[in-house]
Image (tube, rainbow, N blue to C red; front, side, top):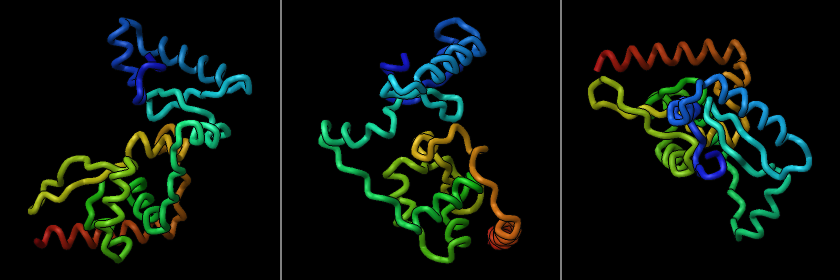
Amino acid sequence: MLFASGEPLDIEKTAKTLLIDKETIENCLAEMAEAYKSDEHGIELLNLAGKYQFATKEEFAPEIRAVLSMKKNTPLSSAAFEVLAVVAYNQPVTKAFIEQVRGVDCSGVISTLCQRNLIEEHGRLDLPGRPLLYCTTDNFLRCFEISSLDELPELPEKTITEAIDKTQDIEGQISLV
């Protein structure tokens, strides 16, 4: 199933399908992940927020790109990283929140991050105008080689305080509308 699936495999769904308890599957997957860490394998088993997927080890990426005639992804701009950080640490967030934190229009950057499947629309806020909410994706976790958002580094205390103050300002402005 892991090999055949092009997307990360949901453990709960797999457990229900196979009529096996989730804990047994997780233990098997942990053993598999450990086995694939050795140098004799060109792939690894990634845990992406409770979903599992095979991926090629990073050291083989140049050869795979060459064989498959894939272009190397262009790196993200500093603006894209800033928007991605705002979304990752505060999700779900609106475009207005991101723009308030950054102080500039973010329409183009948000569109690019959606196209690259690093963030996605995640419903709408129940306020006038029903603004879209954005969250990170499983692809975000895969790209940054983390299994959950809990693995993100802690923000400096000053940054957290500033973000809370800005959030309270935004919420006050929204409630006035």
